[in-house]
Length: 399
Ligand SMILES: *Cc1c(COP(=O)(O)O)cnc(C)c1O
Image 1 (cartoon, rainbow, N blue to C red):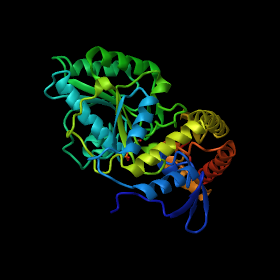
Image 2: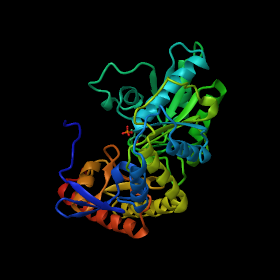
Image 3: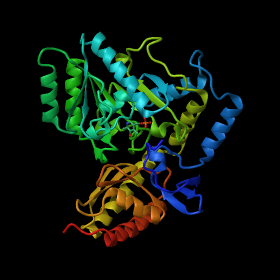
């Protein structure tokens, strides 16, 4: 089906931060499957771990105990604020599980008949019906109405607007089950969360026993420069959702919750593939490599380098770019309104052998493997600069 607007290249092989298309052209991959290939392409550790697992056992049902799943859950809980984990296969599914958990919490803990979940404008939570309703971007709703009941939206990082919406919803008593937020909005334009805003949201949620859920599908698992995005904000959620980078390219998602926030009992939620031995083994390899190679700290250092170089690029070409923002290896180059759009820059970069992905109309996003080295970053900047200059000569300026 034509659900994707695809670029006309066919990627057939990868190694580290490089991928090759079917004509033999090589690209520096700063997309990494959209923040998925944490360890780069064709990682030795993943090949070894997965080959070993395939020789032992690929899939069994959650009718039985699964040791790889228990070990991955133990790693997540030992290294995060969460105490328990449910595994699924994608980010949208992880958020679906979180939404079900929130509704049960609303009924059971707050005594709400029709619970509401508050989410941010410009957010992105996935494409299943409830996750896309949670997504505060009308363009993703169009044509799929009626949307799921029980969602309200507020502007991200806006404390006054959040307080006003909360007060409105709770004017006649408890109504809000949960607040669902990305610590940094990825898809919505690489907007980092404001610590003061998140601290206030945390306080208000705690006062009222409202669940605070973080969607860490893109920012989690080391990409932010910390293991979890919430560490950048100094605020702990009651639950967090994970997916993209967790399996390094093997599909896996997870909902991790504090013991105090756990509401789901046997039979209330399930997934056939969720947490199978193969996907959890991939998660375990990613976890081991993150620790062994200290990749969150490496992502922080590489992120500083990348952001500084993008900011320098913006200074050299103020008519094209405004500046750079992001955390760790989730960075955005903010383009000037009226100049080339993000998609135009992405296309020009592809011609120069650099893969990038837009985050909205005016931001070009960098989400490379966490294993990227300084020389790759310098090469990416050289290729991006050539692409920007090529755009300038083909795009009429607004001024
Ligand atoms: C990609 C993404 C999702 C959706 O994940 P899928 O695996 O595509 O369902 C949800 N939330 C955030 C923050 C994402 O970046």
